[in-house]
Length: 249
Ligand code: 3Y8
Ligand code: NAP
Image: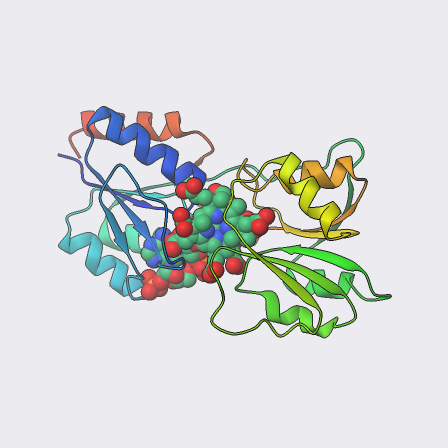
């Protein structure tokens, strides 16, 4: 009898949970607990860290998990590294469900940078009106470029005022639409967008809007991904689970 743990927090994780619930296949979805009201799921949910690799090994053993699906966001690099290490140590089947990075299309004006520090450096120069669509966790590093007016977008209201002298804050969760993104960018006079290369559909609308408004985009490449079995398709995970179940693992 398989016992599936999904590391969630993405559109793909939610799609996999829905597919398993539809099949009546028991699974548990795990959130880190970063947001106040995470999206409800059609499978049972747990919230909070495991306590590092050792904590996850203990959890996998105590809950007799047979299959670990890492469907976390491409920028959740620590969780993905822990998942590979813990699955190996606990002898649990492991697969990553992720999405391919976005690639620049005709008309895109992207400046690719390797990481958040690269994005900060790319904003050197005269004051601009920058849409900082990278969430809440890494906003303060942009205080190194205080000359800009920043449009921030967080999932929840922050506990403290962001340390950027000139900023506006929107509290909203994706997925977003290109039309709404264009309206937001026009309303705030945005002339530059900063984005993580998250891939997927849930955050792509801002790139479509930037293309239509001919705005430059600072695109932050995703961190290195651990070597592991990986797919971009929910169907492939279901097949992987099905085969494993046939093998009676
Ligand atoms: C807590 C779970 C679903 C999943 C929806 C996807 C799409 C909407 C787009 C922008 C970019 C950003 C951010 C974003 C998107 C989806 C997906 C995605 C980007 C929730 C969620 C959790 C989080 C955590 C949150 C981070 C933040 C990042 C906002 C739920 C809504 C910017 C990433 O305030 C905080 O601490 C937020 C932290 C990590 C990145 C950051 O550095 O701040 N996601 N996002 C998960 C957990 O606790 O385990 O609340 O329902 C999930 C989603 N966010 O099921 O429909 O699949 O990518 N999430 C980025 O891509 O740049 C917003 O504004 O344009
Ligand atoms: P991270 O930096 O890779 O992980 C930091 C720690 O958070 C992990 O070591 C683990 O704590 C805990 N953690 C992360 N994901 C978890 C999960 N799904 N279930 C239980 N614990 C989890 O992760 P992050 O970038 O903060 O992302 C946190 C969550 O937000 C993930 O679910 C991710 O899918 C989602 N998300 C992130 C982004 C992003 O831009 N980073 C975007 C969209 C969604 P312990 O060490 O204590 O186990």
